[in-house]
Length: 351
Image 1 (cartoon, rainbow, N blue to C red):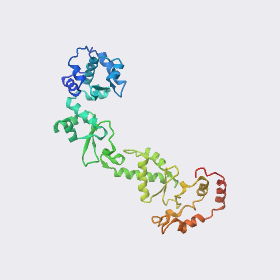
Image 2: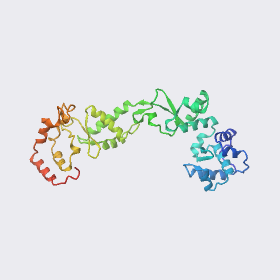
Image 3: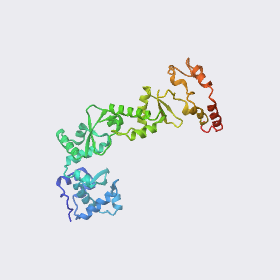
Image 4: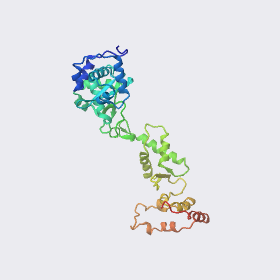
């Protein structure tokens, strides 16, 4: 009983199977005298569909498909319908993979040249293949290759992607493949161009978020969670967002320090006149009580105009700095002293 709704196998489709798959498949097709039934085709298709990673000849034998002639006949029928793909993984070894009905409809009616180009593009993976390379690998003329790729793009089987490796250069890759960063440029590129406006938008959003925190310190994780909730062409990773914050730090718009846990912590510069203690993340818990109670004991290094020339053992150094000496000798208030006395009973578990 023939399958309803599917066209009869065309001679070009069957020729494609024989010419593209060398070995047992093409040799067996010539002498097959096996009667093919619709239920056999559907059973084979469901078996492959249940194994999306693909099935080999050995897997078929274990699944009850020991008749090689029947397998080849069914495979040819499904190939002509565009519902099966076959890959030669080694001499005499084939991999069968089912194609879902939606994708199969896209392949229906394609000629040998279309399938050859598609398979070449598919093999290129996430780095794609550019026009000249496609022509060299398929042996097709330029006008034929252009016509075939245009049809494949129309059917949403392949797509053109601008490459950052060359101005105006495009590569072809499968429709559902995410381009490699070496091709797309990653988060900071859009359509092959450096996304200047998107980067500036991220910088402004980070500053707006920090301004809304009332001068509290903000972690890189806080910023990343906030940016994830904002609209945009893409979502930067936490590490990429730290690069954005680094640019704001170099412009002296924020202070940045790495905490004991290794996480970056940020605070706006000059928002309240309160300094940002660089050493806060490096001190043990029994000392942080004093620093949380008093902003007057923040390290003066951040406000020092000579901080770029300050080196341990140098002409300008922390050990000879009068501001550092005054900062270390300054006595806390009675309330601060009481807080430190209470905290001093704790053990230095994290020192």
